[in-house]
Amino acid sequence: MIDLRRELTGLCQIYKQLASRRHGVVLQFMGVRSGAGVSTCARAFARIVAPRARRGVWLFDLDFYANAHYDMLSSPKAQALYGAVGPARSAAMQDAPLFWRIHPELVREDGRKAGDRYYLSMHQVGTHSLYISHFRHDLLRAKQHVHIRPAKAYWAQMRNSVDLAIIDAPILSRGHSGLATAPDADGVVIVAHPHENPAQIRNLRQHIEGRGGRCLGVIYNDAPLAGSDPAAQAAQ
Image (cartoon, rainbow, N blue to C red; front, side, top):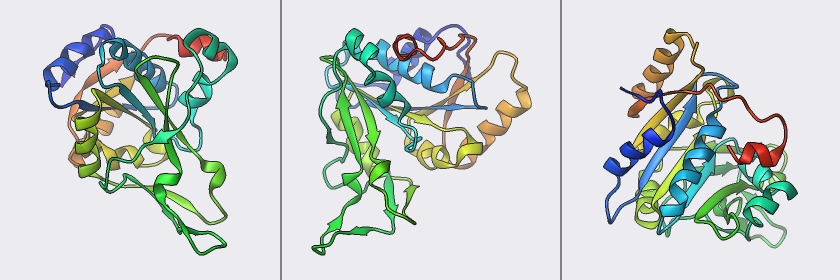
């Protein structure tokens, strides 16, 4: 594993090595425990790459019931800094099977089915090349659940469409969705506190690699969160 202790810009070198003129990169961030700052690191790296991205950077939040990136960047203070969050655009990749599924499928009163792609959308942040995901969990009905699954063809199409896709995955104690997407990413970056127990890091790495994922290294994040101010957190 490559030790990414210094700063997030060091990850840019790895990104450049993985990227090519024709194909983008899919990276996943995953934390050892709650409070490690995974979302902060994922969002910060997206903002580093976005200004130089020709085809855009897509930031996916796998914590569908929280939509932390969308809620933060759509706050009035954040929009004053970065511009308004744009209208929804489809997160589907042509006809490739989606990495999310809704069970059971919703059937409207007229008999039409509400497809899975109906629930997840991408939104541009201001005029920047950064797009953030938004999952419409408010549309879920009783007994409906979201299932994350491997979708190699989806992420292959993603590489043909954007410069960088970032998957912000929840910690294992909140579900195994990150283990489902890890094998389809070009690499997984583990985020941990500087004083994290090495055994906990090894345990997460083993889970990721046991599912066929590739661990690129560890970011030891010692940056404190900027309180509860959405604009301040979004700026990190």
